[in-house]
Image 1: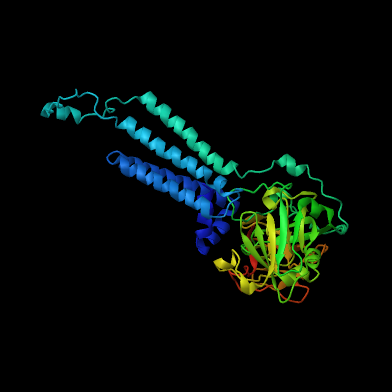
Image 2: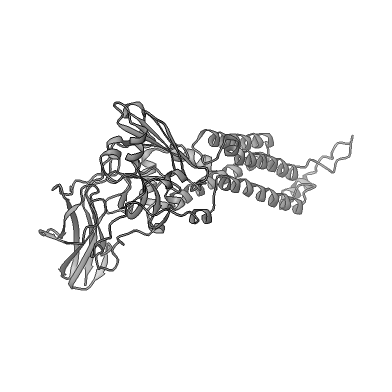
Length: 494
């Protein structure tokens, strides 16, 4: 199941991926599993219908389906520790399905048990043929209890095969993750200044709680990597290869920083952006220790499942707080956010920087490789665009006439937000009040107070970063390097 689903994700055209992220969000993976199960069910029904007259064809079709599932598991990205483990669930499912259809066909078509040896069966009379055309009866020798018992046993075995495909790569427990103690960082994040949070109900929290932080990735099951066996290899165009264990990372100089992350799949005004306090090891320090050679310009990072990401080397060595994160909002990384170690790089969309469950860093050149997402039509380099969003009021909200308030967030990581403006209908752009700035790498909240008159009104927001660049009104889809355009919302004033 997981192997087939992962292959479908990898083979799906870009438009299909974009549709799933935009319209399904984190429900895309359960929907995919449901589609695969539905397709297998339909296939089984068709095989059963064919098997009523051609049992060998039905068995062959079932075997073909199982072989395809095994091939998908053997050749695709996986969390299983070796090839035997990755294909085991498919083998179990194939055996169960094949044995099951043979038994069911045997029960439904046991052969004639009424003819005596050496004596041909009596020719049916027209009257008996007419009687046979009446209500259908079970075949001779059919045992309903035996059939139901066999079906239930095979169902349990099949569920076991499906469960194995999900459980085999399960890994360590939540208790193990929570039992890890992250050392006190040598460089703490500065205290958040007073007033970083807009005092408006419904606006995004300045620090996004871990359970609410967006998750966009290509895995059907969340990896649960054992930190005791995890290691990171740094190699390629370096003077000295490094191999670090999780304990090695924790023994190094840790820093703590507030950083906002944004997914390139985020539509204008979308939810795939969040702010957290991260703890980790500066990547630049590790690269200096390894000794970057010659004209290297990229880091190819690889996740535990084999997914690759390409990051500009300069973004990891130019002084920004690019880290190998081990902690998020005061606890070890949650499993779904990359435990035990992930990359966090301010100013770049996640698909070129934020490798979760990272196990390998190769110093290389962009000319010498292509990464998972760039192979699928996304840009090689993707700095985050200046953006803003209205959180309050929600679209088509009903509010009372008179003094009203709008509020939201704006972000331009590595540049910072200098100004936010709001337009009511086709009126002049008016300045919003900015909340205090934590850092140029975090989003900034804003508030706008206006006099709401009866009728329907459109509120539009735009931001200006500290370089003077005004958020563009030109609308663009997320592909290939992030969405653009202005977010607006319609309110009904009574």
